[in-house]
Length: 334
Image (tube, rainbow, N blue to C red; front, side, top):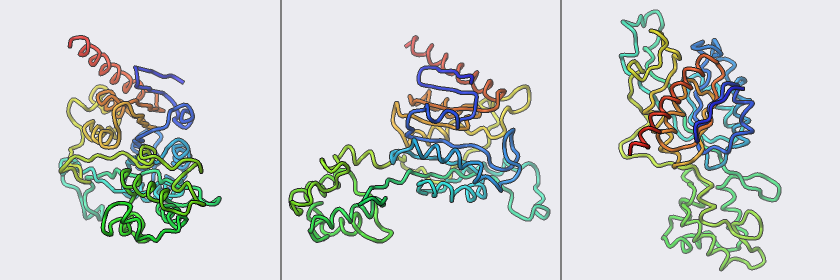
């Protein structure tokens, strides 16, 4: 299998399913594979069957992903709907559906809506998922929400004492220990307070509480690793207005676009920056023209990406090699 490694950027020409075992655990996965629209070589002709096609990949992602991992799943609305049950099956939790609005310029001429019988389509979806953490409770896997309650129940303390532990009036019972849909994961500083209180005042026979190994309670830093990274800039919403690429960023061979589904570098960069930190690992299983790699190069992330079509791989590799050489020259000139 042909590969190109440029510092922390790893490009492969081949099937990513043959590479996942070699790649380090990802903080971010950018998935922009088949849509079922016959849009490129290897794409399905219709969305029916996308769930079967993706399952092998999703199973492999799930082996290497952690609760620290965010998946950005690109597709059409119907394509995503078909694949969603498979993502849920393998422990991925839906967070948000984001819309890439390409604007009216994406519609060529006057669309004959009477013939197509629907509104002109100018959008794609990019759906955010996280790997749901599970905990072992007496041989059964339970959710974080249930595990927190079960651990507190073991202390023998009333749930009202969780408020005292956190130094709040009633927020702990309403947020971190509620049974309803309003539950959310306690921040690391609050979890530390809950754990410390439980281990100080709980039944001595049950200690340690809030522990994974039965020896030490989970630390503040370890708890932080059980949630994905996410830092959204102010004013950024789930609707992304950006025209389809037509300028110098569009990779062409002659007058023809090399890949019909090339994504804007600005959008991919934003996703990576929001959900990872410098030097984190980013996967792109369906690399295309390696836009994810270009973003990682600029943002100082490690990238592992594969493109199965040789001619697309070659053009993408040239793109990254040029960007890498420009960045190297810039570093030397500073």
